[in-house]
Image (cartoon, rainbow, N blue to C red):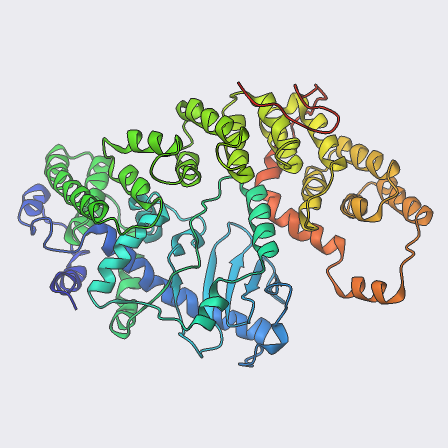
Length: 547
């Protein structure tokens, strides 16, 4: 193990000793910056150590409630994609298995906390993906997970900390066989596209495009042996306040955390002492990032995220160049801007949108849609962007949700267009707007759904609208579905009917969609939608180029 980590392990037991009476003087006697690992690396190690226990709990739940202790996963193989659904006997939990049934992600519905574990034991046991921070769900700022997130505003730059842990012999990058790599990363293309489409709908477009499952890591046996000590340290950290928190942070070399705690405590001498070390810590981080950038080894947009994280003066200029099509891919630069969510970037985003729409960006519909969402959120060419999303870009469902959020005066126009627009290639996205209306549950929602099914005789186009009305507490809404189905009896061959009965029912799919959309849609229940026209939206839904 690296000497700096040996010193860290020696420092951890003293971190929660009673702080000295003259705290400022005691802080001055602590080792210089660089004597211990950087706080970015230290907190990543602490969180990984705590994750060992969470993975053990998740594995136990999966085996008890889903796998029944059977190591064979053949029953879960599915050529159409990985099986998923609610975890039997555990309300509020869901699971998603990989295509070969060798690893599984367990997710808590409320909050989105997720844990991925290997369930076959044949390849590599417990592991984490590069983007493991994205699976932690809501974390209070007082927790180790909240601390590591404050240090890594983007989970992409955690790669640097993982490199440090590998160099210290505490982490292994998994050397997967080609077949195992396919199991970890592969889904049929249509499943990948549909999953991203639904995730985008649930998040309002704030989806980072960096691959989350291309790289996997695991703690080495010596590091796993330390997981109990690391978890105990994390528990004590979450409870520490005031001078205790200042001393604990400083003892492990987390001078940014010590300065933050000193500011909260309000002791001027302690603030001055921690600020001096904070600047040294930041300078070291900036130098490390500069060295990595010079080496040119980081993939795609990590350099941009690293510059942003370090507060580098060159970051705005580099980002503008990337948005203009120079250097880093424009799509990755747009993901960075989305994360910043600052309206001052609207002119650059609009220029990128127009460049894509005149095919300068190769007709990248997803990139144009991301630009349009950003501009709508910040009230920049809002009507034109909504019209473009609903028409040219083929995202009528997203236009409807954004209109409910940011342009309620034309939300009815967008909702009506989305219900009647040509559906996308995949089935589930057709249900996004009916699921949203079911969640909102106001009288205007059932009026729109009822009007839609009454004017259509297409079972496929109306199946989610009918599913939403079947869940409506109003008996008239349910009766409207019954009458429609009596007037449009199912007339298909027996083998087709058998196939349909073996697949997910629209009612079940609607429940899954409402679970995904709940956090985004419930706050919209009290909006009063209007039917103002969307400027530039023709009857076929074609939107104009914005000027």
